[in-house]
Length: 153
Image 1 (cartoon, helix red, strand yellow):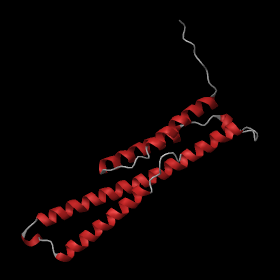
Image 2: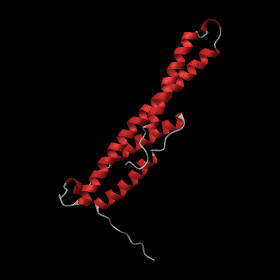
Image 3: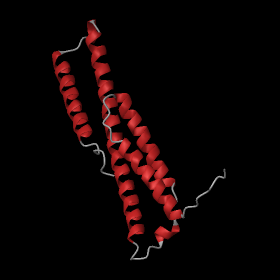
Image 4: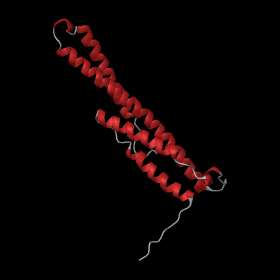
């Protein structure tokens, strides 16, 4: 039994790579339900973006014949993928930042509520803190609602 090695053109290899990156991009559209998942989403999206930016585009794609729709399709898909991942990264950064701030404020409020004596929480401070938390929850919900739905890449 012999191993048959199939050779692909740089354009075909780029197409296979692009399929793989699009699949990874779609996998990143699952909305996180915890702060840890939001941070993992951010790290995975950053990694995907770096992978996309490191990829060399075959020179055939840089010298496209106007009649070659297959090559135009690859270029369009690549550009759409780059834009989608950039957008998703921006949203993941904002979501992680919001979730971290929310976590920090919740911890601060919990410490203030459990403190006694001179460090007691005033009603005004409590109302202010609760309003800030309410706004952060709204912001987080809005960000999560606007995460790229699956299949848009």
